[in-house]
Image (cartoon, rainbow, N blue to C red; front, top):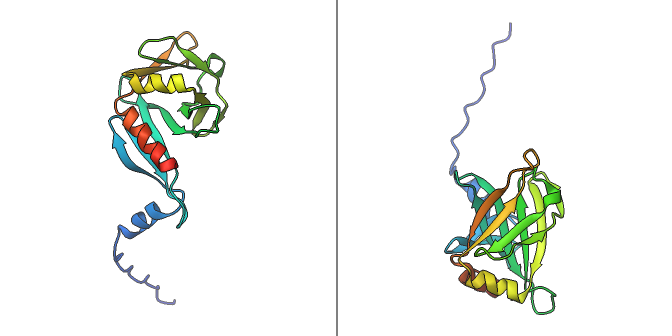
Length: 177
């Protein structure tokens, strides 16, 4: 019988953190550039020589601290019909026909249809008028309401803090220019 071959010993990694650092620097990787109150300036690494695109971002949690929805906003510029674009991602198995409901400081709720679902969740995209954006800036809190498909008689209400919103929107507007 031939002697059993022994596997060569693996050399220890020279720097175990290098792959993680390299991955964070690759194009397409998200990162938090700065925070403003309860809002974060979330950017995506762009190829070298290009500006990193950024959005204003907040992760919404239920009363038990579970992440339930993501809200992202970005300015649309002077040529757009809306002052800001909003993307809200909620869990799969949300009752899509009930739409997303959003109110600021207990005011009248606006309803927004869901555009599509993917493995990350169901997405509603909509624009904010100048007046709606002004309400966000002067408001204290927003409330998002969704309805679970498995319990259509129940509502899930999520508080969206507006602390830091104005400073954050100003910061994301500056990156977009």
